[in-house]
Image 1 (cartoon, one colour):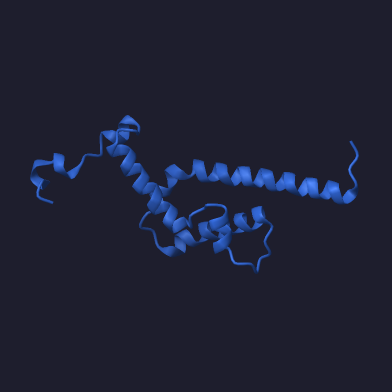
Image 2: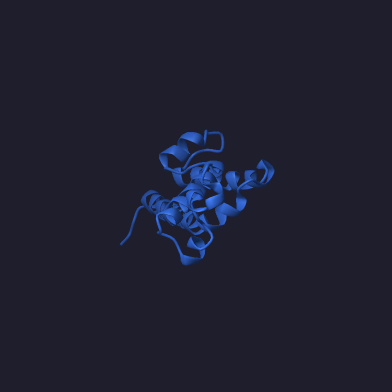
Length: 121
């Protein structure tokens, strides 16, 4: 099938954007386990990751470098890295307390009420 040059360029751009979006979603899902390691680190360590996420959002939505990224992250339903770290830790704890996580996590997590010395907390 032959496409005019403008259509071919648009199709190629959308294909590339689709692959980048899929890669970003994969990165978001695969990095979920690593995000807990970043908790408590200084902003100087997290900032490069935020810049990568911002660049990915700009690329996926076709924004210029001068456009604001906050609304782009909202459009894509992506939390900023700082909040994503907090969310993933909260999700991990919820899943651990609900019994929906691997055994190695269940073994190290216990509710405070189950510890006799800390029942009053």
